[in-house]
Amino acid sequence: MSFANIPLEEKQHALQELRIIKEQFAARGWFPGTSGNLSVRVGAYQPEQFHFAVTASGKDKSIHTPEDFLFVDQAGQPAEATKLKPSAETLIHAEIYRLTGCGAIFHVHTIYNNIISEGYGDTGYIPAQGIELIKGLGIWEENAKIQIPILPNFAAIPRIAELIPAALQQDIPGIVLRNHGIYAWGANAFEAKRHLESFEFIFEHIYRSLTLRG
Ligand SMILES: CSC[C@@H](O)[C@@H](O)C(=O)COP(=O)(O)O
Ligand SMILES: [Zn+2]
Image (tube, rainbow, N blue to C red; front, side, top):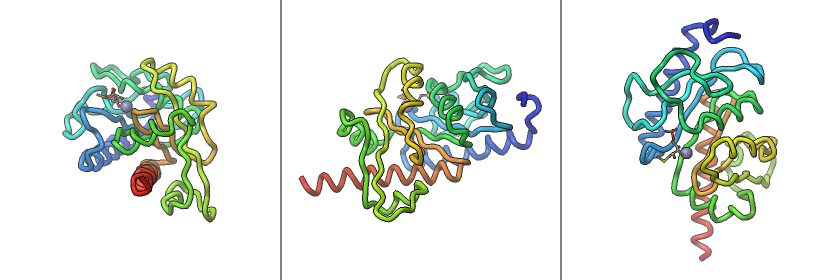
């Protein structure tokens, strides 16, 4: 499906969803120093052709402006004429959409995801078990044991993107960049938000449990 053929209402709905999520996450302090990026996919999905709305790069994500988002294609290139620059990490979003066919991807930098990803960085994944919010990831098995993948925080985004296929864990809707932040995704914005909140609860739980035990 070409970008022009995607109904205007669907595009506007995606922008409205992003605007609401951006405001909610900003209120939690999840975009410090302009960090973080958000996207919602629009139109039909084929691994080799799709489109999504993504945050423009380097903006203060705690305020709303008419220049907060733009639409890009599967290669991360603007889908229509614009002076806006897509997020520096758009290629990571594109690769996650290509591999999963998901509907929304949210990326935030938090103290908990940074500290925990550094702590487990050499292991390559964050282990979690016995935390109720694992169910928030859609994993309902009793006492489920999960491993949340960690990728190195290379400066070159294409180098990170090329590691994603091997790192993806079936049933784990997220990837952490070491000492950087998390990407969480879902079939739609509602699910991606639930997953992101669940991951962040898990990270804080692990951090506080380790601190308590000394
Ligand atoms: C200003 S620190 C954050 C950036 O380095 C980057 O990791 C980030 O999340 C935001 O980049 P952006 O290009 O605004 O989407
Ligand atoms: Zn980032």
